Image 1 (tube, rainbow, N blue to C red):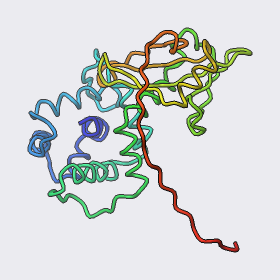
Image 2: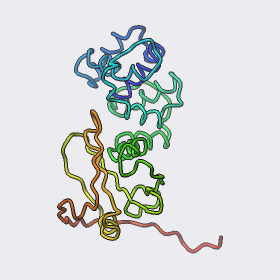
Image 3: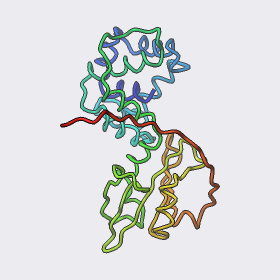
Length: 242
């Protein structure tokens, strides 16, 4: 629904024409018939929540700019597409949602599948929100942010504040409450850095996100160890002279 609301707000009638409709009411009912929304009004409301971010002549819910983080996240993944290209993305998504529906013959690319996967992962959305809002946290206000997610070393970001280095592990929660999980790697890094290790929990992601900063989380929060055994398979080639 966020993808559809974004498309309606950004591309207006050009978006719905790609689905073969000439009016928004017909398109909205189509979305309801697909089972993606309970009512046509719900589709209109979702567009209203994105309207303030686009120069489309509509004010939408100008007084309730609560989806800016979602708009920016969608921008980061699909912001360069035109109306036709973006509509095709939604068609592929709908076809994946309902295997009995065929809206396009365009083959879904591996990169597009990876982008959809990121869109569905709470952690990715939370990390993106943190990157765009970390300076609103008093402790990090004047810090220099460095992305460390690629290294997989028990933290997501490093924030340099003068000569001091803080490590931040970001977690996301859709609602206002929920539990979070630390991997063994994250737990070990938190033990090593103590008061320089911060857990940043972005709560209420589905509505109005809230940044929650927890310094030295192992001393502040209570964690219970749960061991999960898994088997990892690796595949080795024969010996080859390269």
